[in-house]
Length: 62
Image (tube, rainbow, N blue to C red; front, side):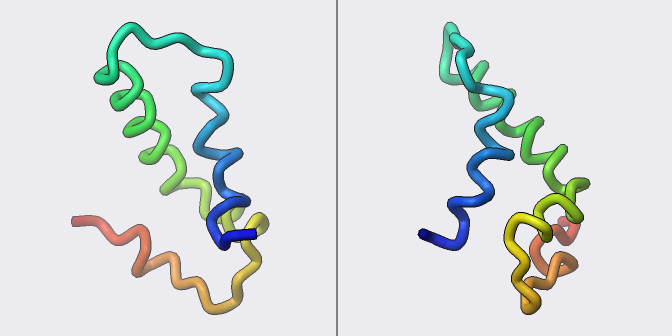
């Protein structure tokens, strides 16, 4: 299993069984989901359980 495979459930959740008229609609929904995921640090940590994962570097604000 790839390291990120456990996280696909979190990304796929809002798009499962949905229909999108345009790729832009899908892109907007996924961008919003990524913003939500930046606040789900505990859930992501529980799924990955990688002691070396540094969230401050991954989710730093630009």
